[in-house]
Image (tube, rainbow, N blue to C red; front, side):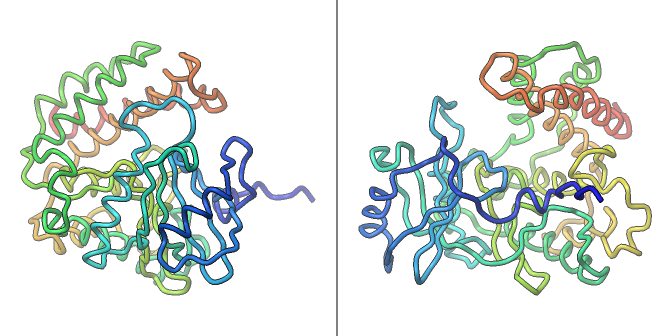
Amino acid sequence: MADAEPTAQDLNSGTKPVEERHRIDEAKLESWLKANVEGYEGPLEVRQFKGGQSNPTYQLVTPNKKYVLRRKPPGKLLPSAHAVDREFKVISGLNKVNFPVAKAYALCEDEGVLGTMFYVMDNVEGRILWDLTLPDSEPAERRAIYEAKIATLAQLHNVDYAAIGLADYGRPGNYFARQIDRWTKQYKASETQSIPSMDRLIEWLPQTTPADDQTSIVHGDYRLDNMILHPTEPRVVAVLDWELSTLGNPLADFSYLLMHWVMPGGERASLAGIEDFAAWGIPTVEEAVEQYCGLTGRDGLPELNWYFAYNMFRLAGICQGIVGRVRDGTAASAHAQTMEARVPALADAALAFARKAGA
């Protein structure tokens, strides 16, 4: 009998030996750890996490404790990309209010140690789950995990960011307008084919942007596989991967989470195959909205179709950026053809939501 295809869970869970391209000077690292991480005691073993992080992420194993190190990748990068110093800043701030993030220990801005900037934080034990249908859970646990995921995002959006030293972490106000402008420029710079639905969205979205009524910390990529759940309980013990975090409109974050329910079928992050949410124990979009609004003091989200159109447009822009980098020879082409096909599909789906919103 043929072996089963490995699942996303199999491919992304656990650690592996450090890839050759991401090797680091372990002796230099250990000297730095002794000088900068309180309570550090070697000897040190370095492993690399398998998951698909854009910032190389390592597990540092010592006899008494495990740590995690995240660093900028080597090579030429865009000036604002892979800002691990921003990750360190937001995690350190959230440590002060007991939000579920790893304890941050130290940031190294001296590129002479490992070649690029890095920081060290606690290694939080628990489960990282990659399949949104949670196939190993019973319906009651599925429900509890989804509710914990929504409650944790609401908790983030309720944090007084100025009180924890993050008043300068982004620009308050006009978040959607700035994001639409950013992804429009990215799309046009990377454009490889004419997509009428993208052209219509680029015209329509800026004219119909909802009022930016609130500013909070936004994660930017809040989803199931960017969090660690307690080993046995349906509870979030750490939110991971703060690379895209900033100050912005919390509804951008929440509506991005809701994209799982409305993404076209065939997308990895889609719940499109589920017809009876109650039988699965997974909340409906309406139930998720009700829970989030109750926790954040909102009276419903009447403009949800606009937010879905915006998020699919943003994803189309991100995908087109990857296609453009392949065209320009600055990215590997393994998934380029797939990405190129995703852009018009996402744009068409975005335009369908825009039409529901009155486009």
